[in-house]
Amino acid sequence: MAEYAILIYGDEAQFDQTPEAWAAMMDAHGAFAKAVAEAGVTITGGNALQSAGTATSIRGGSVVTDGPFVETKETLGGFYLVECRDLDQAIAIAKLCPAPAGGVEVRPIQETSVG
Amino acid sequence: MTPVEAALADAHRTEWAFVLAATVRVAGDLDLAEECAQEAYVAALQTWGDRGVPASPGAWLTTTARRKAVDRLRRDATLRRKLPLLIEPEAVTETGEPESVPDDRLRLVFTCCHPSLSPEAQVALTLRLVCGVETAEIARAFLVPEATMAARITRAKKKIAAARIPYRVPAADELTERLDPVLTAVHLLFTSGHTAPTGEELMRHDLVDRAIDLARTLVELLPREPEARGLLGLLLLTDARRATRVGADGRLRRLDEQDRSQWDQASITEGLRQTAEALTTGGAGRFTLQAAIAGVHAAAPRSADTDWPRIVRLYDALLTVWDSPVVALNRAVAVAFAHGPQVALELVDGLATDERLASYPYLPSTRAHLLSELGRVDEAAAEYRAAAVLTGNAREREFLLAAARQETEIALGAVGDVL
Image (cartoon, rainbow over all chains, first blue to last red; front, top):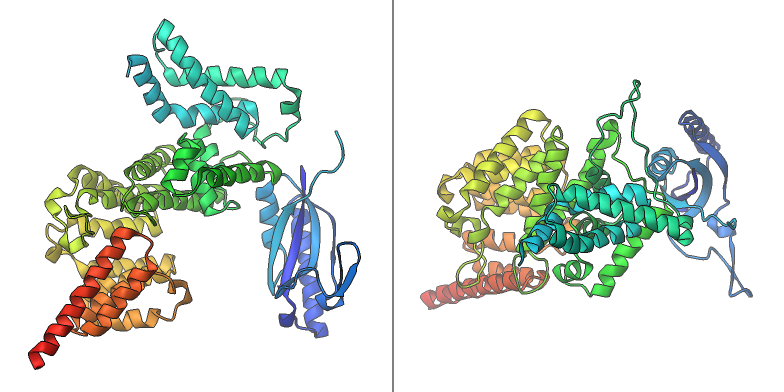
């Protein structure tokens, strides 16, 4: 088994801020979690992030600036950590992940334990 | 070449993929498997020279390479610590018998052409691992420095291990979807050879031949996949025109200028047979439909005999499975032959705003040809020049510039007539 991060990117300008849209988004993620469980895959972590406008970056260990580290139209809005058999399964799971204003990136987690 | 060297060269061409693919299974690592397969070929030179060529050279090489891999793993602890390739155990039926084992070569092909690798990396890996072509030779074929190609291949192998791309044949329900990038990589290999994108030479026969061999192997390994057969048909029918695409003067010949008596009839016959079989076994996909179009051209004894309305209908079908502006452009060319240049020019003008065609040389060259037919020679000359700027192939550029000069001469001649 291997752990992967599913990074959710999207254009914040396209986000619908209404409570109805938020509720629909939560439902979509609830359905995603259910589908993942049915596929026999474990979600080991994850969270939604507040908007990129709330980000603060620190460069070279000292220079503090307002905003995300990389300025792009599509910003990182949240992530999941999943435990999968291989990349094929991770891709299959990632395809189910809601990302209406953009898409997702699958990255293998670096094993850091020694030995 | 001694008989042993000849046998070895033959075994390299026909058995390399088989030997490597079977060794990967034991080695659990692409680099180690490659080294052991190479060592087996070196050992063969000595052993076969001493004891004669074995009855089954492929089996001898496979056994030798696998044994070397086992030895290396036993001796070398650092190799054992390397992240092993994800190798699916052989499937076993309920009675405990191994299921009809898919050819290991297929695992290798599907790993090399995994959709998570870039198309360039897929083609390079396929040439290196499936065809056994040296990295230096691949670099020369694609006109990049050897270090660049080596880095591209190394990066792709590293991703296979780190991202855990499995060494397996996709399950039946995803096979058709996963086969598409494989066929696309083989097609890209073919087109890279058929019209070398850059450089002085129009064609690189070695790449073309490799691509046809690969397509044939895929048909052999996946006989029930119509698109693999369609691809083989397409490549054979296109390559049948090999001898006539460039004239004695080195200039590119259009389809209607080619000497059809020089087309390779054996390739055409096999290509038509494969295409017909692909059409009858499945809902026609994009390679099969392109093969069918090439087949209509191949079946016309003279250019004037071409069944253009049928070609337009095939392009209509192709557009429903493959929404590509390049296909729409080719359809417009067929419409020009079937219904005249004015209708076609309107279609091409409609495509001119498509951003995906912004740097595509065949858009201005097609417009140029249609404008020329309509007698709008000044505009035609300008479009030929625009196309010449966009192409990276020297032969094509020459052809386009010559066409531009010709249009200008016609325009000047017309002015002369008026004066």
